[in-house]
Image 1 (cartoon, rainbow, N blue to C red):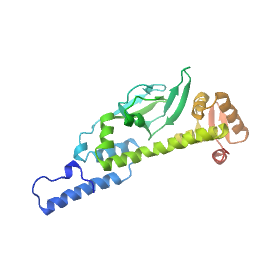
Image 2 (cartoon, helix red, strand yellow; image 1 turned 30 degrees about the vertical axis):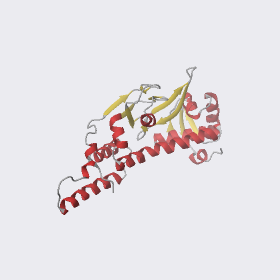
Image 3 (cartoon, rainbow, N blue to C red; image 1 turned 60 degrees about the vertical axis):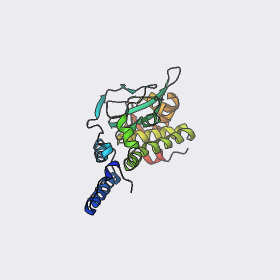
Length: 254
C-alpha cells in the first residue's frame, strides 16, 4: 500500500489511531478506483476525490468554463500550454497549417474528450492549433493542477492516465486507418466517426472539413459520397448526410 504525506504518523499513537489512518487511506484509494465517466460531473468528482489527499488539497476550486463561438481559436500552434482542455459540449477541431496556408484537420474532439495533454506533459509549445468547429463549452484545468494530478500521488495519477487513455487509443487507431486504408474506406469511416460523435445517423459537415479529416482532396470526398448515395448507403439532402446502411459502410473493404 502506497502512503501519502497525510498517512504518516510522527507522534506516539494507539493501535486504534493507526487503524483509523489505514482505514482512511483505503477509503481514499477505493474512491479513486471507481470509474469516473468523462463528463463535467465525472471530472469534478475525480478532482474532489483527489483533493482528499493532503498534498492535493490546494487543487483549484473553480475551473473556468469557456464558451467558444464557431471558428474561435482554443489555442494556436507555437503557444505554450497553460491548461488541459476538456470538451463539455460542442466540437473542437485540431489542425495544422502548411507553409502555403492550407489547413489539415488532425482530429475532431467532442463531449467527454481531453485536448492538449501531450504537449502539456512534454512541456513543449503546441505542435498544432485547435478551434471550435461549432459553438462549444470547454472546461479549462490549470497546468499546475494537471501536473499535480499526474505526479503527486500514484493512485490519482493512475486514474488520470486511465481517463486519458481512451483518447490515445482512439488516436492511434485513426492514424493507422489514415495510413493504410483506401480513400473510399477512409471516407466511410469518417462519416461513421462523425455520426458516432453526433449520436445520430445525420451529420452536417463541410466537404472541405471532411476532406481534411480523411486526408484527401475535396473532389475525391464528393465523388465517394456520390457513389455511396448511388449504392444506397447514404442520402444527401441540402448537404446533410443521412446514413442508410451503417453495416455496409462499416464493412467497406480497405
